[in-house]
Each structure stands twice: as structure tokens, then as C-alpha cells.
Image (cartoon, rainbow, N blue to C red; front, side, top):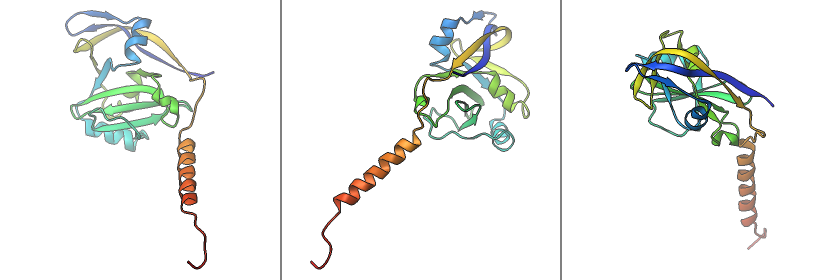
Length: 185
């Protein structure tokens, strides 16, 4: 069984001076279900163009719309993809999730990430602006990190052959329902 390994900020200081410490439980309860960290760039159009034309990102479809201007993805492994939502105000939400080719994409096996997105867009904008959403404040210093390991799902079910099978079965059933005796009538 494979996995995807990454790091996220564990202990960091906010612009208010508050120190935040994330635990493994926080990761399970918050980062898997919510956007905790948001990145920000001053020119979302330049980042979008760079991600599409230089880094090989593509439109993330199908995707649930959350108000973003652009929804992009980049395949990372046979199982995992990086999904970026780019907003008109310069914010970027990033998560690693099971590829959308599999039904398991619909399960909550995803993680809000920081560095993967930055690594891809830093060729056009090389500063890391990080917003800590629960407090509504900027992160000004990262003290240390938490290692995260996302385990591959036990099964991977491609959904396209299932849909194709349903469509073909529907067309076949329709054709049979239209069957009539031939010849002169």
C-alpha cells in the first residue's frame, strides 16, 4: 500500500504575536475537512497563466464550485492530485486529494496543503504569504513542521467505465423498447 507524504506548519506565529500549535488530532479534524491555510499572491492572472502554460496544470473538472475564479489540478502520482482554487482576491486554496478519476475522490481523503502549491507557482511569484483562516490572521513565522502521511485508499474505483456502462445499458434498453415487427403495416 502506498502513501503521499508532505509537511505542514505545526508551530507558527501569527501577526498578533499568538503562537499556534497544531496537533495530529487538529490535522484529522481540521485540515482534512476544512481549508485552514490559504496562500495569497498579488497577481492571480500571472499565477494562473504560469501554472497552465509552464507547470502543466489543467482545469479541474468535474469540481464543486466554491466561488473560485479558476479551479486547477496537477496529477502528482497514480493516486493523488493537487487541486488549486484561485480566487479573484489573490487567495489560493490548495489540497492534495485522491484523483478525480476515482469514486474515492468523493470521500474525505484530502489534505489542505501549503508547500506543494508554492513550489509550483514560485517561478512567477517567489514570496510565501500564508493566511491562517481559523484566526483570520497572517502567519509571520513558521517555527517547525508536522509530517503527514496520507495512505492510499484500499480500493480505487474508476468511475468513467461505470458511467459508460450505464449509458450503454440505457441505450440498449431504449432500443429494445422501440423494437417492433418489420414489413408492411
